[in-house]
Image (tube, rainbow over the protein chains, first blue to last red):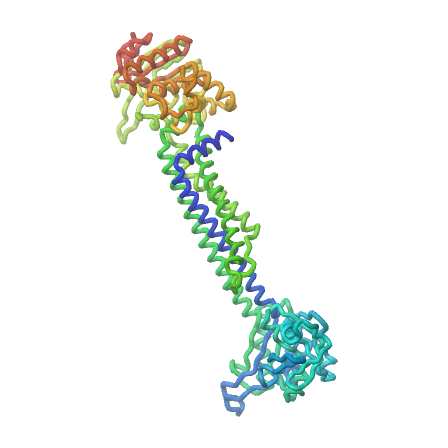
Length: 410
Length: 222
């Protein structure tokens, strides 16, 4: 074994530049494969992160304007939701689970004051089901509950950013803030995985908001979840039923896509995932292609090397080397070259992937990229297999060299 | 002992068949020093290849130390060459990137001898060739005569039955040729069977016996 390694080192060492360039092509192939796959993991994690603050098994419904005349109504009519639509979805739409409605004050941002500080925030009047659909995390206190709604309490759940900016580090829980000109008791502080923008909101009970901002029983947006296990098809069926239910209630054409707007989170999520899967397949294709080019290079160089060493191989055979021993030397060279270069490429790839967050700290596309141990093992296996393949043809050529011909003349 | 009986060998060249050795008979005793002469095309290279188990033959029998050498596989041929035959070539055929000692030890590697033992034996043989202090030098640092002596040491390393030397002085000047022939004579004096293929009469004259080949047959022995 030691003799085999010595032979391999000596042979490769005779053409350092050639060896280095060949090794580089293999190393580069592995590097590209590993770095791209690592970045791919980052893309995927970023996607998961972006969707963390919304339940993927949820549907959002916004009001729209009709675009088709229907049952004697002209087109261009505004569809308005009320509390009764919320009840209808809860009771008449098969598959709906948590149903939430929200009512926004007529002005998007409402002046909010605490002692000397003031700022404008987005206020949403919600019912308790809204918490799960938006995946709001309560840090202090509690969320809006049913008795708040029943008693139309003037209470508020504020985002972490609101507390930070208005209260300047003081705990907000139990304090009163002014929303417009009404005092509201802070009963909770929340965080949201969606980040800063989501944490600049204030939630108040739906019934309270409807009274304070003259909403009557109107609702702006309807949100509801369906079963976690619902597949894409189920959700699409539910969306269709929802459209016909609301069409009947509000007298618009069920095929009028503009009367209401529906965002089906699961379908959108699935579409993005599908795109990601395609990207990952493409990454494999590109990575493997580059790696293969490197391996072909190794095979090529070894063929040249075997041809150059024809007299040497002939002599080795004359003094007692068996074909198998000759094959072992050439295969050994291929394996040594590809594995050393491959591991260096793997290390460089891991390094590059580790370096992404450091080089691009604030990028919005890649999050926590990582080279999975599985990818590492797979790359290692690939290197070994391809290395053997790269050596096979030259080794076969070497084994067939006849000493008589190799030793003839000079 | 080498015994060739009715050896025939033909090469297919395209559609033509070239009959190179024709019912060749030859016996070489243990410890003999034999020269083989013949013009090019006489079949002497083919004979040497058959003797060296580097080539097969079509008919007849070749006995080497009472072993019938016939229909040997590549694998078995390699083992037989390693055990029975030491080669010396006109152009030395030393591996340029290995030291003199490593070159000498190469056949021992394929004989499965451990490294330390190989290197010890190589050093010993190089000292016999008066090249002891050149053991760690590369062939390119040696003169032609020194290189050929390294090659002779290599041929002796597995302690074979015969040494086959193919024009061993063909690439050397006359003074060096003489020196090499004296080394080979020394090897022969210790009891080794020595077969030298040459076209130089003064080299052949140093052998105990000269076998002349013509057109695939032995035409004279003297």
